[in-house]
Every structure is written in structure tokens, then in C-alpha cells.
Image (tube, rainbow, N blue to C red; front, side):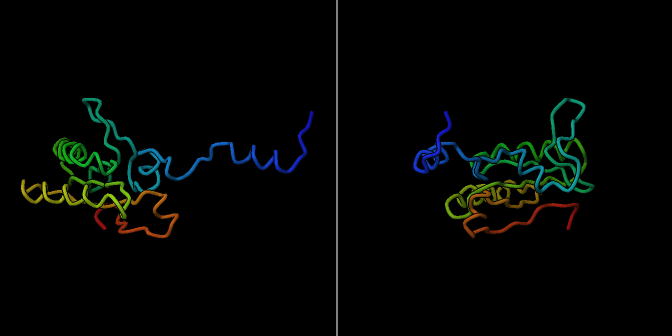
Length: 138
């Protein structure tokens, strides 16, 4: 039996979960912003999210800022390239993670380049914040 009543069709469309940019995974951001080799595998089988001619870059969501810092420094040591972090965050509500990362880097004297990839939902609403993807030193 085919349902043709408009109110039922409308309900069914609203009930289907939509795929929004807020559902993006870390890999989606890597694929969108990496301008080098994605998921480069080191001899110890760890994976660099993005390896460019100049940077070993770790992508991570804001709340995982400390993990991103440790990984980027390790990848830099393994490759001889500059450490890079692309922190994925909502620039309206998660700036505290960026501030924590910057403070830790400054306090420890770590040489790391930091960029921001705003949550795609933030871009969708028109508040994109700062986007400076690392792409081989530019």
C-alpha cells in the first residue's frame, strides 16, 4: 500500500535522521584540509594524519588538544619535519582548548605550528573563525 497523504510523508521525512556536517569524523577533516599524504604510516605502525613536505600534522578535536600535542611532537621526531596541529573546534564555544594548547606550547618551549579547522556546523551558521590549514609551509 502506497502512502500518499502529505502529512504522513512530511512526518516520515522528518523522522529520517539527517547526516549533518556536525557528524564529521576526524578523517573527514583530514581529507578536506590535508595537502599532503593522508594517514602516512611510520615504521612502528603509528599513523600521521597528514604528512606534507614540511610538516607532520595531527588533526584532533578541541577536547583532545593534549593528545594532539604529544602525537605531533612524536611524529616530528620520527620524520624530521615540523610539528603541526590542526585543532577542530567550535570557535564560538571551544576556544578554551586552543588557549590551553597555546599555553602548554609556550610554557614548554615546543616548536609547533597550530591551525584551526572550525566545526563544519560553525561554518554552516556563518561563524567560521580562523582557518589556516598547514600546506607545506604557506
